[in-house]
Length: 176
Image 1 (cartoon, helix red, strand yellow):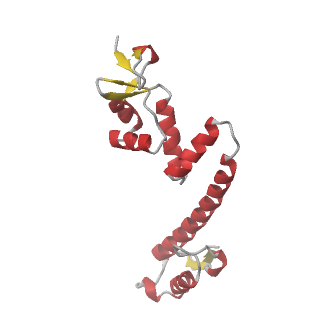
Image 2: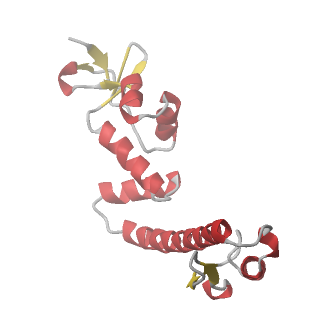
Image 3: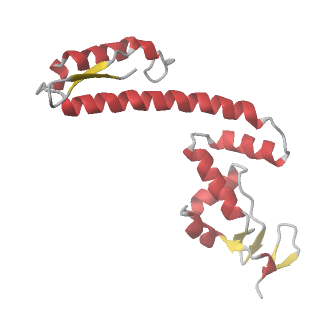
């Protein structure tokens, strides 16, 4: 049986199924250095140390997955820390942060949709030089005039619709 000591010096048995940092890294697909960084950020705590190595409780795998899920949703590590703290206290203080993140995600989705429309237009555009296409130039000028650029608030109405030429000669309007 593996014996290890907690940070308080007590001996703990393997019956808690502790996971070494290398094993946690393997199971989560993260580098050990990322897990140590999560520790420094207050997101993850080792349960014990054995032979100078960190060992984590069985719930740590789910906690790391939750951190990754929050990161995928666009939350910063500081925001994730606030979420985890609120959740551990069974507080609803996380709701305003989540609502703000939803608004940010809606903005990013709208930007991605507009970018997708431009790329689709570029692929279907009959102009050999995309910069000479009137539709693309209008979208480019609208973007430069809008507050959508990084550091500016989004103004969806400033980006015009793109007219796409279909193979059969019909035209289709896309965009916002």
